[in-house]
Length: 147
Image 1 (cartoon, helix red, strand yellow):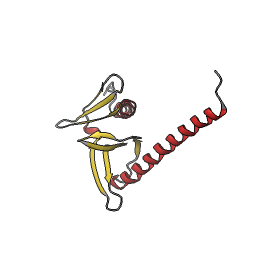
Image 2 (cartoon, helix red, strand yellow; image 1 turned 60 degrees about the vertical axis):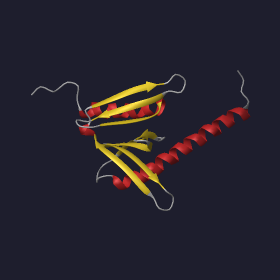
Image 3 (cartoon, one colour; image 1 turned 120 degrees about the vertical axis):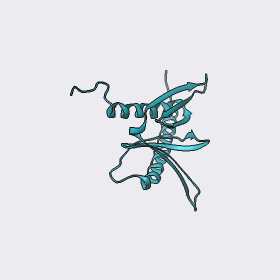
Image 4 (cartoon, one colour; image 1 turned 90 degrees about the vertical axis):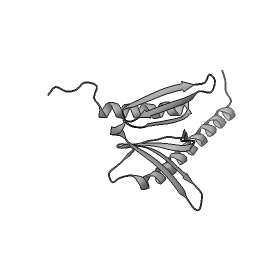
C-alpha cells in the first residue's frame, strides 16, 4: 500500500498532539499531587486519564508507598479531594472487564477492613493494574526465604 506524504504527516501530527496532551495532563496531575507527598516519597505511575471513583472523576497516582486518588476542581478557588491507601495495607487486587465493544475495566482494591473500586477505559485501567501488581510482587515475595 502506498500512503501519501500528506496523509502520513497528518497522522503523525495527530499522534504527536495526543502525546503532548497526555504529557501535559500527567504533568498537571503530578504538580497537584506533589503537595500531598511525604518527604522522600516518589511517584512511580500517573494515570494519563481520569477514572471513575466514588461517583466522580479522579486521577490515580501510585507512589513507592501509597495508591492515591486525586482530583482538583476550580480555576481560581481550587478545591482538592484526595484519598490515600498505604500499599502495604493492600491485601488483594481484583481486575474485571465488562462490555463487548467499548470495554470498561474495574479494579477492586481490598484492604483488611475496606474495599475501594474504580473503573475506566480498559487500556488505561490495565496499565494501572499492571503497575499495582508489579509493586505488590516486589513487596511480597512469592517464596518466603528460609530462616
